[in-house]
Image (cartoon, rainbow, N blue to C red):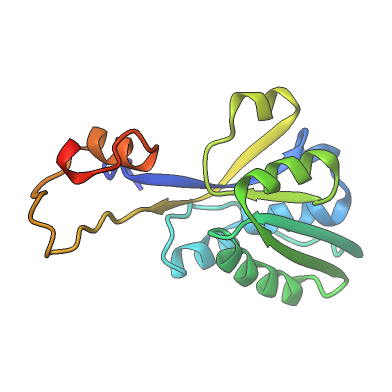
Amino acid sequence: KNGSYTIARPFNIVTNGDVTGLDEVSQDFISYVMSAEGQTIITEEGYIGGEGTEFTSTQPSGSITVGGSSSVSPLMEKLIEAYAEVNPNATVELQTSDSTNGVNFALDGTYTIGMASRELKEEETAQGAVGTVLAMDGIAVIVNPANTAVEDLSIDQIRSIYVGETTTWDAL
């Protein structure tokens, strides 16, 4: 939570423009997931949540679609289930794909709210995508004990593996 573990990524909810421009169900749902109750669920599920704010549902009715990152989906499923108990008037449909579709489909209106398990790209924000960090996800790096080519990896070496710059152990 204090940022000392540097191998982490944000779980973002993504909207096309500011949250205040969304329909009532979307605003209510986002307020719920960012509330103390929503952030408690996030923490209980093993992610790093925030303190959260006070929340009282306005009980709007309607349907929204949340979609995107397969990494965020299991957490979002728990949040949607809990929100259904708080506001039975609303339906939140979950679509699972990937972070890029989560952003793009939030921008084009396919999804009311997108999900991305990464920072938003500059070109995405230039098109109007607004990311709100829902939680942080710590990433554990594990090397098979039978791999004797590596004993310790730096953050830069790990990054170079994940972005495809380093593709063989002997390059480390």
